[in-house]
Amino acid sequence: MSDETIGIIGAGIVGLAIGRELTKRRPGARVVVVEKESRVAVHQTGHNSGVVHAGIYYRPGSLKALLCTRGGAMLREYCADRKLPYDECGKLVVAVNADDVTRLDALAARAGANLVPGLRRVGPEEILEIEPHGTGLAALYSPKTAITDYVKIAQSFADDIMAAGGEVRFNFPVTSVRRDTGALSVLSPAGEVRADELIVCAGIQSDLVAGLAGDIAAPRIIPFRGEYMKVKPEKADMVRGLIYPVPDPRYPFLGVHYTRRVDGTLEVGPNAVLATAREGYRLGDLSARDLWGIASWPGTWRMAAKHWRTGIKEMYGSVSKSAYMKAARLYVPEIGVQDVVRAGAGVRAQALDRDGSLVDDFRIHRLGPVTAVRNAPSPAATSSMAIAEHVLDVIDGKAT
Image 1 (cartoon, one colour):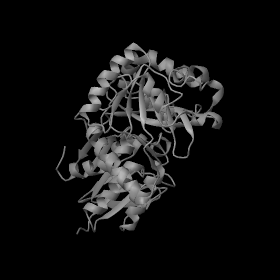
Image 2: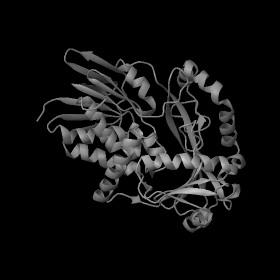
Image 3: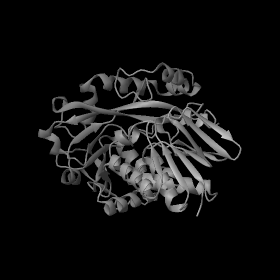
Image 4: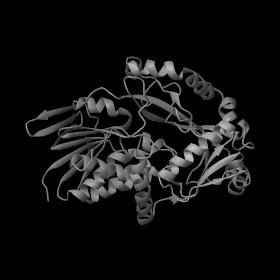
């Protein structure tokens, strides 16, 4: 039993998973989650593709690889227990040219090292058996890749916290963190939370909020907007599950792909366009503060020098539906520009080091009584329950 208070900043799926795990590990501790929005999962959790990843892409031995495998299994069990949506619709990672085929071989080796369940390589004929309207030279088929509703899962995590005696406080934007003798004060126009320990899970704002608690500047969060198209209902059944391209190993983004949602709709996307605001879900959204944060970070210019051609290509696809769908039609030729409408968008919190390196793996900083989750991109939603275990192991000195 414990009489300590543990504060968590951020009611996305990672912060709530950590809060839920705390109520199990430290019975009697007071767990308080604070969130600047009026409900859970407003930002990255509520704007992602809903995919439960199987662990195909991640460097063996990395936190992503380890926590995705465990987290996916935990999530499947949790959804079954709570009767939450979970559909193992399967995924094809499709090679459409010779370079893709070469990269597919390397990807298959990586997935094998990560013990991705049921994964197998298929040829053109089996691609058509799995996805009758698909096309490609070869593919990796992951039958256990699934889709779910992460907003419902996040809400369920919040309910678990409150059922265990914890609190989730909304409309609580954190403006400062003060270290007092023996305690921390988390301050907001909405009030104050006193805590013995603090865990920062602020997603797109993680570097700024961690900075309030005394963390270093690196890595800086650079926002990338991912825009989706929705396939019109008359062709939404042309894709049974998920169809992905072979990813470019230079980037942490997976490329434009077809994603079936648990509500039966079919989406294409997302692309990856540098956003002009951290919460810039629309093309016209602009924040002078966020733009200055992007422009003043030396890593931004080093990244731009390396990848400007790709950036221009992504921007062209953002303004032109024809350019956007040109790549997508390589995988499902019968779905064209006339068959899609612009849908929603999400913003990826891409961590960028000072040298211009795109941070790929999860990154967690420990600052005495403060633990900051500084980078938790995809597959963070899939891995959320395992990330919670790992963060608490870090706090307890059982992991680094």
